[in-house]
Image 1 (tube, rainbow, N blue to C red):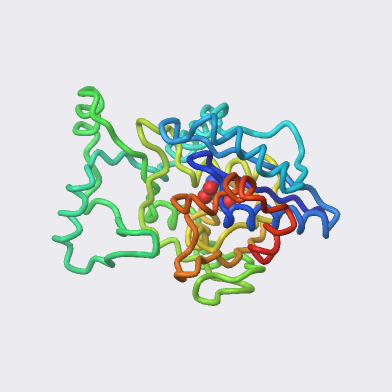
Image 2: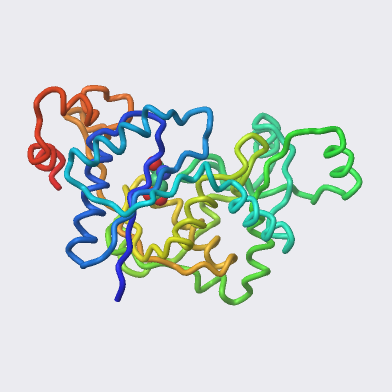
Length: 289
Ligand code: GLU
C-alpha cells in the first residue's frame, strides 16, 4: 500500500516546538513506511502570511534534517483550483451565499429557541430559517455587498441520502476525547461552515482537502487541535468525490504551565532554540519525537 503524508504549515509566524513535533512525526512515519513526505505551504491568508516566515520554514525544517519532495505546493498560487471546487458545490446547491455579519448571526442565534449553542470550533450556525429570495440575493449582489459561501448541511444531507449516516473516518491516532479507530462523522458539530469569503477566496478546509486529494495524501498526520475539522473534511470529501485518507491526530505539546505551545511562545520557536545552541537531536528530545 502506498503511503503519502505531508506537513502543511501556514507561514503566519515562526515555527515552534509543536510544529517541529508535527513535521518530525509525519516525516518519520513516511520513512518508516517507505512512503513519501510532502511539504505544503498553506498561505491562503495573504494578509497574515509573510515571505520571511515561509523562508524560515524551509530553513528550520532543513536544519532539523528533514527531506521533502520538490516542487513544494504553495496554495496562494492555486486560488483558481479552490474557486472551481466552490463553484462545483454551488452548481449543486450545496453552498449558499450568506450576507450576514457576525453580529447579525449572533443575534439570530440568540433568538433561536433550540439553538445548539457553541461547538468545539465556536458558534454553530445552522443556516437561515428561510432561504433568501432570488430577488433579494440579486439586489444585494448588485449593490456589491460582501458575502461568504457557507456549506448547507441540509442540502449536503439530502445529496448524500443514506450515505450521510455512514459518514465516518479512520483515526489511527487519538482525538481529544479518546476517539480512535472508526469514528462516526458529526458535521453538525460545526454547523454551516464558511467555505469562502470575498477577501479570502477559499477557506482552509477547501484548500486543504482539495490539495490532499490532488497530491494523493493517504495519511494526514497533524495535531489534535484539528481533530474536529475532520468531521467537516470527510463530508467535503464525500461531496466532492475526493478519496479519503486516514488520520493520525497526535498529542499537543504543552509548556511547564500545562498550556499548549503557540506561535506567541517566542522562546520556543525553532529559530530561537537554534540560536540558543540546541541541536536537531536535542529538539527531537525536547518534543519527545
Ligand atoms: N495549515 C494548517 C495549520 O498550520 C494545518 C493543516 C493540516 O495539517 O491539515 O494549522
